[in-house]
Length: 231
Image 1 (cartoon, rainbow, N blue to C red):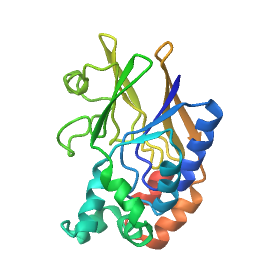
Image 2 (tube, rainbow, N blue to C red; image 1 turned 180 degrees about the vertical axis):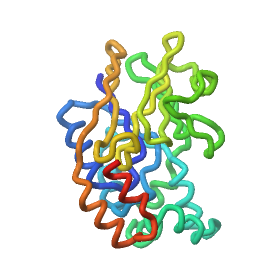
Image 3 (cartoon, rainbow, N blue to C red; image 1 turned 180 degrees about the horizontal axis):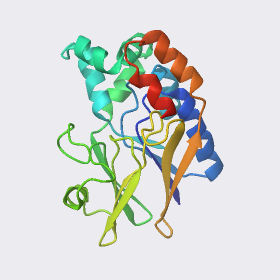
Image 4 (cartoon, helix red, strand yellow; image 1 turned 135 degrees about the horizontal axis):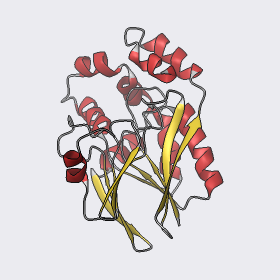
C-alpha cells in the first residue's frame, strides 16, 4: 500500500491541485493530512471540497484550524491574527458552508492509525506547545522527544521537509503543500510504502503567479505572503 503524507495546504488551491494530480498518478491508497488546511491563502472552500469528497483523505487539525474556530466562535482577537496572517480567515468565514466549517471543527487534534501492520501517528506540531517548532536542524534531543512508539510519527507546522530515524522509528515532516519555505513554488509531500517502509519525498512545481497577485491585492501590507512564493 502506498500512503501519501501531506501537510500545511493553507488554502492554496494552485499548489494543492498539483499535488493531488501527482498523488492520483502515483496510485495512492490513503492520504494523511497533518493539519493546517486553512490559513494564509484564499481558496479554502475549493480545497475542503476535495478533502471531504475523496474518502482517501484522513485529516487532523493544525494550529490554523484552531485559530479559525476562535474566529467563528468569537473568542479570538481577529485583528491580531489578521495583521499577522492576512484575510484568509475572513474568506473562510465568508465562503465556507456550515457543513465545511462543521467538518473542520470535528477534525481530531491527533490520530493513531495502522495500515498493513505499519503504525502511524499524526500530530501537527509534534509537541504539546503550538509555539514550539521542530526543524530539520533541531537538536537531536528535540527530535528524539518528538518520536513516539509507532513506526512513523508524522508532523507538520514548520513547512520544512525532513526525516529523522532512531531504532527503526521515524519522524517525518512532509513539508508544506501551500507555502513551502525552503524552496518557493515547489509543493512538498512524501510517500510511504507499507510493503517495505520505503519513504520518498517529492517536490511538485505550481503556478505561483495567481497566489502572488491575490496576496498583493488583498494583503499588500504583508509582503511575506507573496515573497515566500519565490524564495
